[in-house]
Image 1 (spheres, one colour):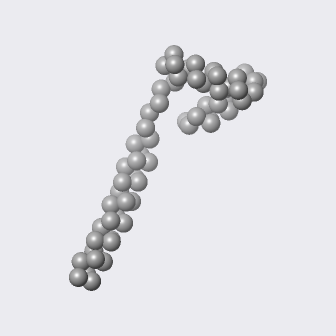
Image 2 (cartoon, helix red, strand yellow):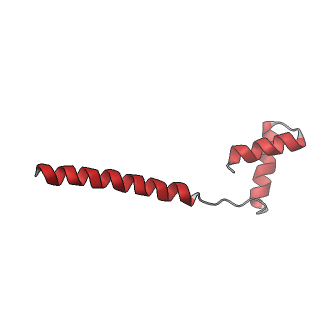
Image 3 (tube, one colour):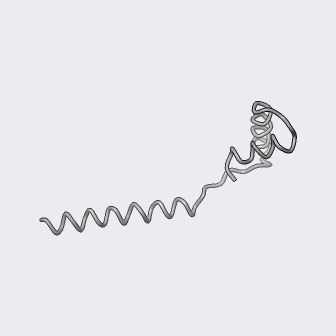
Amino acid sequence: MNKEDIKNRIKKQLDCDDDTAERIFGQALEDEVIKIRLNWNFIIGLIIYLMVIVTGIWAIWRHTA
């Protein structure tokens, strides 16, 4: 879940406004109730995509040289 999903869930469950949900979210981060983790699937997919583009550019450059 991302930050906005969590804040929307807080607002829905506690029936509060954006500022209160942001404060609750911040407190949960400080108390380590919520932990921030990287989305490794997205990062690895992005690296693979960029490497395919770089390889294509390299192949075109080698072909024209």
